[in-house]
Structure formats: structure tokens, C-alpha cells
Length: 79
Image (cartoon, rainbow, N blue to C red; front, side, top):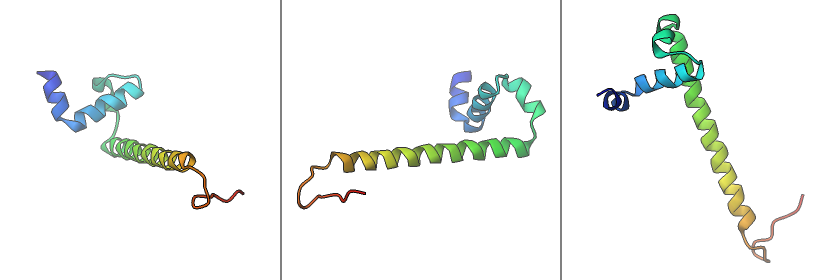
């Protein structure tokens, strides 16, 4: 089945994500894009994912700081 094969093939999933982003089919995309450009897109997606993850972790850490009860032991200096 196509769905099972697609789930098992991460590279193929990547092609579909890129094609969707560029509003093309995979069949239209692959013949027109070099392997170097495909590798650059893949690196771009990975970097973008890492940046989103880092931003989320920073926001969660700040949220924990903001929710901490303030008292003599937890006083945060003002700027």
C-alpha cells in the first residue's frame, strides 16, 4: 500500500512536504530540482525545526520562572 510505503520512507515524506510548500506535485518537483537544492531544503527544514524547538523550550523555561511564587528566597531583581 502507498500509505504504508510512504510512512516507512522518510525521504519520500520530505519530498511531499516540499512539493506541498511549493504548490507542486512530487512528479513535477523532482525532475526540476537538483540533488544539491534538495539537500539544502532538507537542511533548511531541520534548522527551522531546531529553532522552533529552542524557542519553545525558552518560552517554557520563562513560563516556569514567571509562575514561581515570589518570596524572600525567590526574589527576582527588577531591571
